[in-house]
Length: 264
Image (cartoon, rainbow, N blue to C red; front, side, top):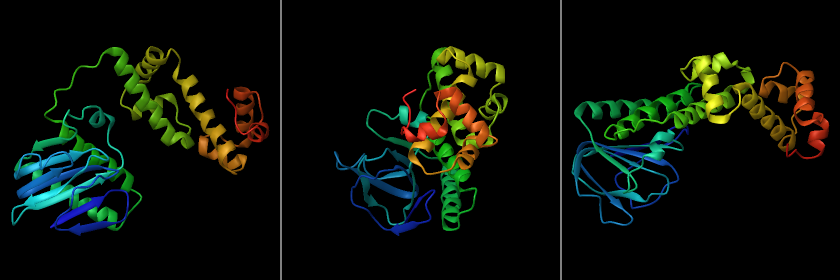
C-alpha cells in the first residue's frame, strides 16, 4: 500500500499502483521494504525491482510505479519547492536514485508518519515542519554527491541571497542587520563584507530597496491602506512609510498609487 502525502496541504491519498505521469511537484519516493520498480516516460523502467531505494523526481519528470514485490512498503512525499542545492545538482539522467540503509528506512518511515499527522491536523508549525523534512530528505538524496568548494564570489552571492530571502519573510518585524546575520549563521561584519563583495553595496541599501519594492507592489496591486502596508513592511506607522516613500521614489504614497507604480 502506498501512502502519498503533500506537505503543506491537508490531504492524503492511498492507492496500490500508478500509471506513468508527470506531477508539478518534487516527489521523494522511498521503497522501505520489499522491492519496487519505477517506470519512466522514456524507458520501460529504471533498472528493475530495487530494494531499499530513494528516488527523487523534479517537477514534470514523468514517472510511476510499474512493479512491486508482494510486501513492498512504499512512501512518497511531495513538495512544491526544495533547497536550491538539490535543484542545481540534479544528475544528467534527470532524477536522483540512492540506496537506503535500514536506518534510513526507519527515518523515512518516521518522517512520513509525522508528515501525515501534520497534514491531517495542521498547526502553525506546519511550515517549519515542512522545511525540516525537505531539508533532511535533500541531504539524504545528495549524500553521494561530492560537493565542490565554493569560490569566494559565489559564496558571497549565495549567502547574500539567503539573507535577502530571510529578510523578505520577516520584513514586518523590521529586523536589524545583526538579526539577519544571526539568522543566516554568520557575523554581522562578515555579512556586510559579503554584501559589498557580491553587490558592491551595503546590506542597508539593498534591504531598503527590497522593502520599498514591496511597498510599491502593495500600493500598486492592493487596496490596503497606509497603516496596513506600514505594518507589513516593518514601518512604525503610516507617517514613517510616507516619509520613506517620498525619500526613495520622490513621490508620496498617494502619488505612487495613482501612477500605478514607478520604474525607479
